[in-house]
Amino acid sequence: MNLRLKGLLEKVRSGEVDIADAMKELKNLPFDDLGFAKIDHHRPLRTGFPEVIFCEGKSPEQIYKIAKSLKKSGGLILATKADEQAFEAIKKAAPDAKYHPDARMVVFEEDNIPKIGDVLVVTGGTSDIKVAEEAVVTAESMGSCVERVYDVGVAGIHRLFAHKEKLKTARVIVAVAGMEGALPSIIGGLVSCPVIAVPTSVGYGASFGGLAALLAMMNSCAPGVAVVNIDNGFGAGYMAALINRMDRQVASKSRQRGRTDV
Image (cartoon, rainbow, N blue to C red; front, side, top):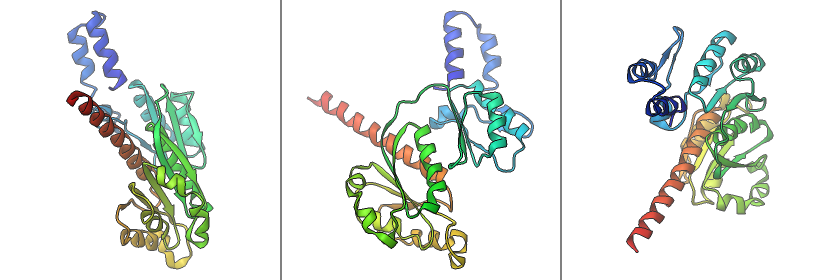
């Protein structure tokens, strides 16, 4: 539950806040209108995860004000495509925020989210790591245990096969690759779990900034492969964490039904 709402309800129950004041506070729950942005404080209640700050195109002052508003709800602040200036702006609102330079992400966690597994993030080459790290940080922030297997592309396929046990035990795999984008198809033909393919803009001229990898992944003949947009590590990490979480929830409900039926 949104920590801001939970705290308010606790105060109403204890008598610390009366209903009239609580109603005034709830007016700001759907969103906080900053003029240049409307912060969706209701999102954690709908989706289980708060709004994320996309930093590109925003001034440091705008980023600071958004982060300050998000911090009111407690829990988590996550910012993508962030540079050092964005990090400093967020630190003004959340001094304990951490910067992940490879992922270009800023994370502030008020509470340690329990981690469940297992998400595996795989890259074709070293040049794909920045996009992969965006997926890693996102999935970890959403409560997933994440392992990395980097630089195992099809040019040296034996490097991938050396990690076959990790591939087989993963609940969901994020496969990040540029060039011709063949890695997700190879992995999809080896595993029984969902594979999320991430095309990157890494490659020579005919790769068209990742378009060649995107089209190749969308035309994969391996079933069980889904594709996000070019360089969208955040989207892949988010989806991987959702699958990971739902998989555990389904298993837990199945066990509960089993005990009830006995």
